[in-house]
Amino acid sequence: MHPLLLASALLTGCLLAVQASVNLQLNKAVGTPYGASTLQLSVAAAVLALLAITVGAIGAVRLAPGVPFWHLLGGLASPLYITSGILLFPRLGALAAAGLFVTGQMLASLGLDLFGLLGIAPKPLNAGIALGALAVLAGITVVIRGQSPIRAPADTPVRAPSGIVTGGITGRGGSTGVGAPAATAEAAPRPGVLGRSGWVLLGVVAGAVLPVQGAVNAMLRGEIHHPLATAMISFVVATVTIAVVLVALLALGRTPRPRLGGLRTMPWWGWLGGGCAAVYVTATFTLIPAIGAAATVALTVTGQQLASAVIDHHGLLRLPRRPLTAPRLTGLALLIAGSVLVQLA
Image (cartoon, rainbow, N blue to C red; front, side):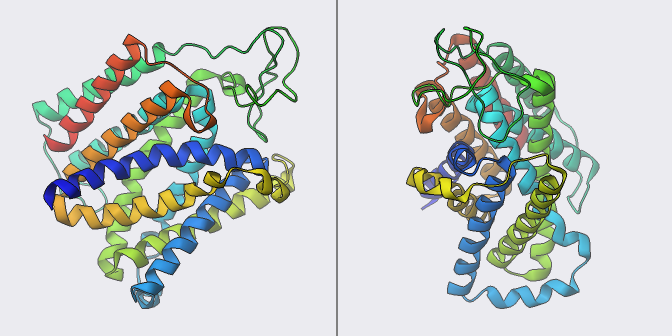
């Protein structure tokens, strides 16, 4: 049974890469990343609510009004993480974006461990942790520096996913990006208005909020006493948060109005993001007591990076193809080795 649990943790990490990739199809159909995130989080909340009802855990929600208010706020991290994935995957590629998320996770985890924050027992710094952190930083640096630009044919403009401002992207022929053929319509936009440094910072911050979310949700679980009810509350908070952001941006004219009619032409697998998120949350709550938190995090992070590398290399899920060059393979190896060292040291 133990090898099966370890394999499940690795597969669960793969779902994070799949989730971020398929969400791009939802974004393309809806026309705004904030609308896509709202739909994706709503699906995850609904799936978890059904699971909680099925196993009889829904009654634990009645305990929520009695917990400290900030213990309910773990879900605030999900909108940032999901929306960042929609923005970053076409710009930097699946491997680079996942690597930035992992780097942020590692840095935040170290901060929580070393300083004993949010109810986590302090953990002294040792050589293994330091070496792992350096390996992760070296790995993501190699991956980012090894990025090769995605080039469109001379007569084909490159356009960004709908609803994302890219600062006037043009193809090599000089035309602005409108109406690209299907074969190149989803080619990666260039870094654009924020610049590559801005997108890199966004990726690190989006990854960093995940360990904080986990620590806050762990405190909520200790008071709710059921993992499915805890996960459902987290996703309900996330859904309400991104919905408020969407309404505010619509009122300010900063994002297009969601086009629900576009969902009819979206591939069926574009809906899988919500299911992946729900499975990931449920699996991690289940696996941590069985195989330990360190092994669970190390395996899920490794699965996330491996799946991202495969998606990039083969151009799966309609993402542009970014071959695994020697520098990118080196960076991937450093990321995996560093992540395992940090979690298991």
